[in-house]
Length: 258
Length: 191
Image 1: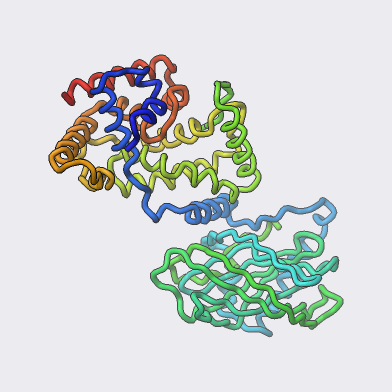
Image 2 (image 1 turned 90 degrees about the horizontal axis):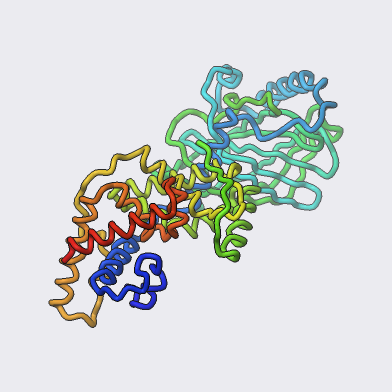
């Protein structure tokens, strides 16, 4: 409860140096009533931030947050998408997948709203950026880009372990999809981990993704095929947990904007 | 709905500069909105609680207001205009659009615990105080929604009469007159 002097200062426009004790008491009571409630602990910035980034993703119709750097890439765009699609098929054959290929190329599915993460970790000349994530009962899909020095055109797959509350969610045969070579030096990959112990009741979850190797593609996009770089990159991030059973696979993301 | 303003009003220069810097930072990077969120969270919640009268609804609306503010932030112009007025105008519209103001009983839980922890006040005074506050709650419930909104903006949100005028779209003189009359009326009913 404010003392009288503070009350006079705070509400000088209402009290006008009044000595009316009834008015003073009323103002004091209103001050007490109106400033008494405390916001619940559930009101927190993290929730607003996550919801806002999710809205931003939805507004862009789940288009990756890339823009074409310059017109010079445009003429090669269709060729690169074709190459990326071929790479996808070959990688899925080699690595395996968690979802039927027929689902993967189905463009009619509803796009998933990934939570934007935008964390970057660098180890020597390799910079790994976790752009976003989609976590659900079926698994967690991570949108990443990797930059290796000044080299361009790599198909690079970060590989590691995904942990939730010190529990290893496990790694399925990760599916890799090269979204698009959107800018020089960067390539985009999505891959899913099957959730061994999904947090069924959580609304938001904090995940730790520890990357322990980078697999450079085995395909003609790179001039160092099959190379693996063993280093460490660690990301900790909080995302919305979607209580659906749809696989957060990458076929439901529109990649043509890359 | 556009939330930008071009009117210039008097404000404390330090407050405006401080808030202007925070707003500009948030416009460049939404994650930098957090200081503004922490600064206004409690005031916004209390204002909305007084408007919608339910804690759960007030909490939901508080988050909605901040989400809307984040989305509309690129349209906000810092030209000596209080950010508070802009933010509470969003809250004013969201509360008005979403809910009808209903008369509802306020639970005793809405009263501050401070009212119950005044150790120096004897029991009789404490009971009288609680009765007085309960009576005031009832009067607020019965109050015209616009008058209650003005009280909420002044006491819960802590806005000046100039800022309140921007929120409700009236002149500062009209706001001040209405507040004075409302207090006078309440005072007479409290006696």
